Image (cartoon, rainbow, N blue to C red; front, side, top):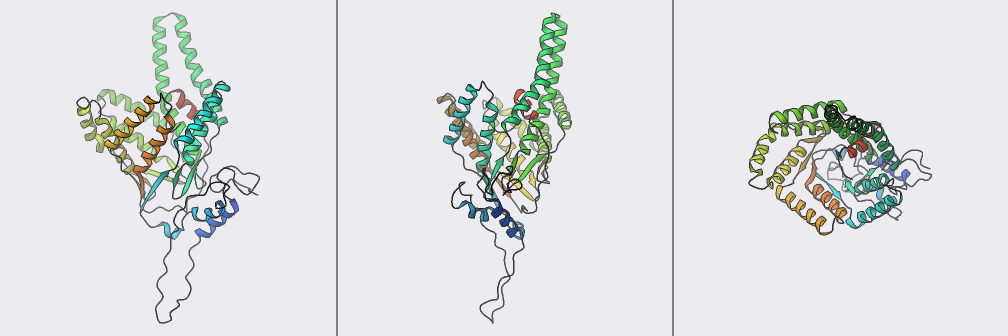
Length: 403
């Protein structure tokens, strides 16, 4: 009987030992974790008496992808999917995130979502969004284990209602009242005030959405979290808008670096934070070149600038002593974008699920984690978060992330 949440994917306790979400047998998985976190025992006596015993070496188990739920191998696969021993974690090397999803499966999810959204007059779209997020994360793996998404449609619906009541309706009522007054000055002043409110709510929504989505994402049963304060990001956002106007957008790379630093450095996995040490001045030269080549290349050089920015941002992102790296190039990004656009045009948008899959595979194929990574010592530290910011980001068009 599971007394707590699933130790692997974090799904709340169910009425049997086997998790309904990932198919892992909780008692076996927990025993595997305990066994593999113990220091390795000394090897037995050598068979040859004259020879001196060779020093024992820790052997790190190779990650094995988990078997499908309900299969005969699911109980045994948890032994190999468990975290590596602490003694073996100190080794460096490059690790790759992998994506296993297929466009056909995601297309089926989209078709069902659309049909149920129509039947329920739009209410099912919150549950449909959860299904897409859950699918995308469950198909993403690192070190042989899949990520999990724990958000619910009910949370998104309640968040949407709160955002509508406390932000959407007051702004709409204020604008309507100003128009009904018939006074041009009142209308102009109200519109300016409304734009200011929306401008302030955009960074608040971005922080709220990131806080909610990370709090509902886990890997090996450990949740992510975001601990940045919304008003700190509002100040960064407003200052950047002012300086971009004064400098004719030359402040843009500095804003991007500050924004990335805020979002990354306040993100946690368990109790351990991510780090970012990038600086805007390192991207300033590349940005100026991009501005100069914008018109001669009909905007195509922006793909090379965005690829360089992606490489720089990932290259200056750390978790503990491990460092992220991206091998994305401008040419590959251009081809990826053009093919995706052609697919959408030729299929009148029906290829959108395949476009999402292609984009995820492309980004993960470029991304790697290098250096020593101690995963065994990470423990859970729950953080509360609501879906209001997630819904507000959708209302204001400030969405951050997939689906």
